[in-house]
Amino acid sequence: MSTSPLNTAPIQNFIQQVKGADASNAREVKLTMQQSKNLAYTLGIVMARLHGDLELFVKENTNSNEDIVEVQLDGGNTW
Image (tube, rainbow, N blue to C red; front, top):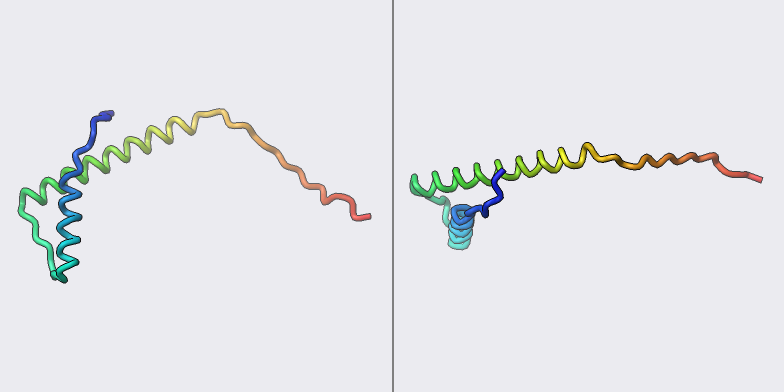
């Protein structure tokens, strides 16, 4: 799995564009085809990285020998 830094500039640009549109009460946000592709590819890479990290985390944490704690409650004395 690659651990190279992710280029999230297309996501940041999109968020800034949405914030600007919201601030000016715009009804829509338009993206060029190139912006759309960059955003889609970046989101795909981010999601793939997150999924890979989750799989690694689950794999590393399901095979561990955890201590089993047993608790018995007897209600105590009522005298």
